[in-house]
Length: 448
Image 1: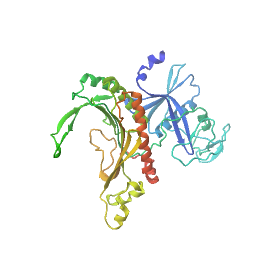
Image 2: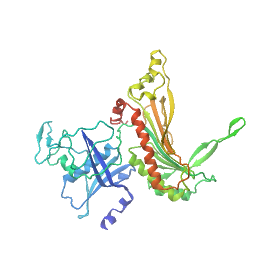
Image 3: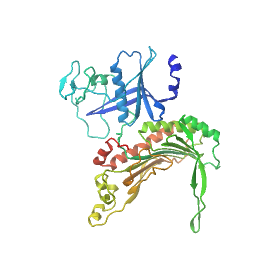
Image 4: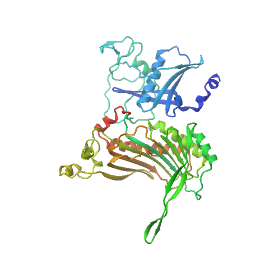
């Protein structure tokens, strides 16, 4: 009861509980579970803090190391971890932990500052395990043998074996590699409801309820959009006059995340995408708010879209033929290299392909080489770190499910569908990039 009284505001900041983490080191992946993760750390929506509960904090630095491991694992997955705390339930005390990167030691050796190694007393020796040459991590849980890896300036008081012994045996929610320098420009999710027979604007009372359900950091911003209609007659399509419509929109204050809402649809977009679990938490809030405010009659379409703008250093517009070093050959223009050898340079190209990825489910890929931007850096959503304009290759993945009937609107079913739509998008992306490009994505992103 005392905890609830002293930390009541945290009950509204719970981002996830019992969240699995994984930490990838040389040759192994260690997995564990954090008690509670809070959002809005320091007043920033996407900033997270890890909170671990203890019945005693006598463990001192060992407990600090545990949370540092969790924080390191979270950052490697793309999460914005800005805080770590240990809460002593008996002493009713909250301790702040330095969430900086920990130093590791394992395999019975400890590396000194000069780089030499020496055995550490009381440590286990682990047998070497071969690592599979496949996508996806090789996960190590408590009790498994693992390969010794070089230690880096680790304190003799702690061993990697200790970390393994205190990790929960669980599967992480994210099995794909998260690239620090990913080329994502925009990620969007959409739900379409059965079409309404009216064209009325949602009342402000409902809009405020929806905003409050999203969170305190959201504001209402109605935007005008141009809408065109056509009439099909004997002479073909006849365009009608453009009409201006107002679309209620909710955005966070830095304009990197927005929700557009009408009676017929809801769209969630972001230009600050860290990791799918973070984006998924926003989707869950928006879906729950839509269920409360709109009470939709059903679902007509659910979609998920990822737009990548791939740029590589030193790439010139005249070097479009060199994309074969970075991308799968199936994305290249016909006889691109041969035509370049004949002196015919490509000015750009675009293509489209559609895949059947499940019952009533499709994945559409639009791709091409061009210059400039695909996602306007000065558009309705602000791009936090827009790259310089120049040659790029875009990959626009649009995966959607259109049921034949009209299923009921159920938040859990909607979330499961979004999860399912994401899988073929990531699978295709991994097939389309070369190891050379993958190495670029693994580099830390440069920020202006």
